[in-house]
Image (cartoon, rainbow, N blue to C red; front, side, top):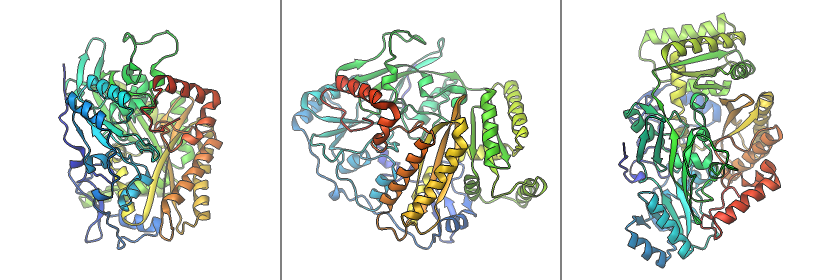
Length: 581
């Protein structure tokens, strides 16, 4: 079997200066009502009656004070620094390329706050790729890398463009021609092995397209990172990605069977596709998390599974965050975690409530009121303390129902109350639209960002409390005039610990350089995470944003070993975008 996705230029359907599809965004309409535009999501076209009040009260902002981002100014881009000899040889191969302004700027950035803020303020970047090329297959990548080595051209692999670590930024000091190698045309499922339940897939395929094509044959990978609509398979490998359903399907390192990588030294891959090998250090572990510093991932063989027979959402309300964390710890200890279990703190609960669409009937409104009365009045939960876990169960029906009972029984021991399938499903699906909210904030002088870590179980509560307090303190000391929003959620659980996501945002009116202020606060928060036993990153990676902490994260010896691998595989620093090392 061979399947392919037919791609169109990304900038025709996606924002060049914000998250996601061009037709999808949050806005406040002429009546002052919040709505989400487009037709792509369940929330699309719906009125969100509580969002305006929550937004204005939380940030001290006014929806009457709106900023409109500028259009792309091609004349403001740095001129293309083309290597004519490389260009001539590339032309001879027939591989498509471009040095048009919109192609270059679209691939000059990921989605860090400082990148998007610069675009929306019309400031642009000091350095952008000089050209973009679109290989169609593994052999095309081999040709491009060979020509890059021959002509001393710098290559930056580009997958889905969803990086939040500065990984796609072009170093301003790089004097060589920089080529953005866009893998989007390498989007085929090359074959499916139904006996061994593996598939060979080109690394440029986008997550949602991969799942759709596999679903047509009755299969799935089960790997669903929050960015799966836009991120690529190659990007998952390069950053050691994690998905929302990792409890059943595993993280990317658990799914990968074989990887093919084009490096300046040649093609790197294992000689067989056995499920496990004991032949010295695993070369896959050098590739996973290498963040584009060693070469280009071109093909991946990964595990697949039949589409689960049954899927059921759920949710649990806890009296407080401490009870919720204790429950998740017990679920992990008993190794009975559902496909996805996510615990949001009270701040995120309030935020999620603000995103509830307008109810369609008096009866629905009445039922919602009864639920709220039961939880807050009859059961005595404080609405300013309670938190919610969202659940997703997958498998055969009988096993799912048994599994569901086991999890709810554990939750009850920690004061948890079942809160229904609808809330669970809504919470899971909201994951895909939350990223659009930062663009709304920027329209009204609010900056927002998220970051993540992994931490042992016995440090989860301390880390969450201390990091949120540190953010509030740092914002106050740095002149932020309004109380910032700080929140967290536990998103993935393990035997020995959990992944924690932090979100924070603030009204930047009165600040001379809001991005610099944000970066100072985030830097302090990262220091606090490390001081509390957290990791530098759970799944976003290091990029340029966090590389200063690498020494204390893996020691001098570990860092030296990684640099030695880089120097051997890429002696001329062809993949010299300064990530990670």
